[in-house]
Image (cartoon, rainbow, N blue to C red; front, side, top):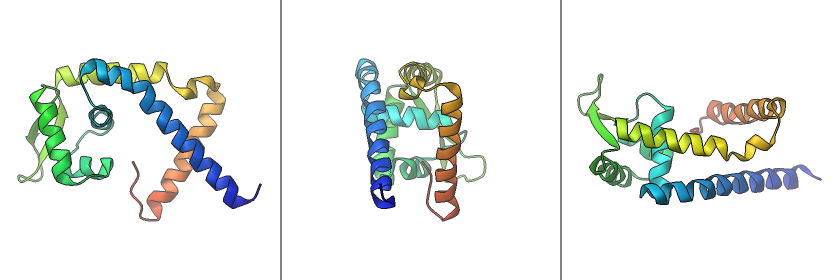
Length: 147
């Protein structure tokens, strides 16, 4: 297999994994009354300590107004709150509320239990983790944003 074909297949696999993960979360999201993207927001908010609407928009690859309206809907549901940014009085940090943390914990537990990676033994997962980290770090060092 030549390098171009190998790279194509790797990308195919990544898309398939993404589809699988989103598929696993669909039922949980529907049960919680959330969209796939709102579930994605909960996951991302749980992964970083400080997340502004702008940073969230960057992570979701959407414009700031889309992220803001999504935050508004989650805030109305009592899942997130906006708090003043400690270093920038113009910005707000988006935080999970206790109810949002409970739902995030359900999402994380569900994702972990149904992970396609669970089929791999620990040693294989550690190797895959190292390889993916190398790919992500390489993208970061060339100026591309990680997700």
